[in-house]
Amino acid sequence: MSAHGLTSTPYNRAHHNYTVVAACFVFLLIVAGALVTSNDAGLSVPDWPTSFGSLYKIPPLTGGVKFEHIHRMIAEWIGLLTIGVAVWTQKVDQRLWMRILGWAALGTVIAQGILGGLTVLFYLPPAISTAHATLAQTFFCLMVSIAFFTSRGWTEPPRPVVRLDASPRLTTLSLWAVLCIWLQLIMGAAFRHSGIRLLPHILGACVVYTVVNWLGILTLRRHRSTPQLAQPARVLLTLVTVQVLLGLASYITRVIWSVDAPAPLVSMVTATVSHVACGALVLVTTVILAIQIHRHADASTAAATADAVSSTPAHAGQVRA
Image (cartoon, rainbow, N blue to C red; front, side, top):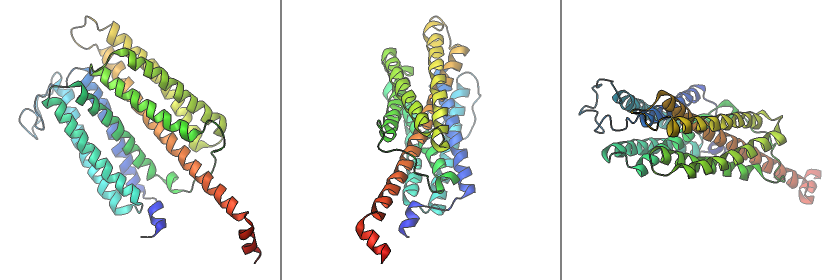
């Protein structure tokens, strides 16, 4: 295969649409998992990988069983979809790194399934449950990235728009933003699974809010007229504001209103699940913005290198010759 084949591939509409559907189901799985945790339904189905001793029979969907079993069914379906993503990518994508990414997605969903099973077999240990929730967010980012990399917009050559000489550099700031959000999601999962207290999560939220707003506002200030950067920046600023409000609602409904409640309140479940879902969207939007920033920065570097080469005396002599 040529070197060009490793870095580019023809746009395949069917393949791209399939990866989009798969990514949407992963988001649905995150919501389903949050419903399990918020409704204290993690051990409603006491065995794994079977459900009440069966691999295929659907148990009566009552109480917490409906949340846990539906969560498992969605997870199984996503496993099949991910096999399709991995195999189809090997068949149609000419980029070596994308084929590796396809297998990485398959390995991640297998690991996610194993962690999910361990949470049941070991009766919801906080460390494993937190790892299970964190890997779900990571898997979501991976699947959305695959969908993004197979899109028509990605197969088109980027315009060099990022000013590499500006300080702070958006390339660096975007990576810090992704890292801060990812760590914050870990702390959020640990808090929900009683692994840590609330204060570290609140402090982390303050850091994330500051860094994400810094990234979004700086991106808009420098590249408001560039839709590839401005659009995800605007979405990110909106999502992080909604996320803060949902976090406040989660705190009020979980810590204040639910103190003496015999069962999870509907308001608490709604606020917490929405908070988890919005957190996933904040993370994946930041990842997409970081990818776009680095892509355009690479294009800027290539353009600057080409200009420098064309202006050297040796190159000028070759042109005159």
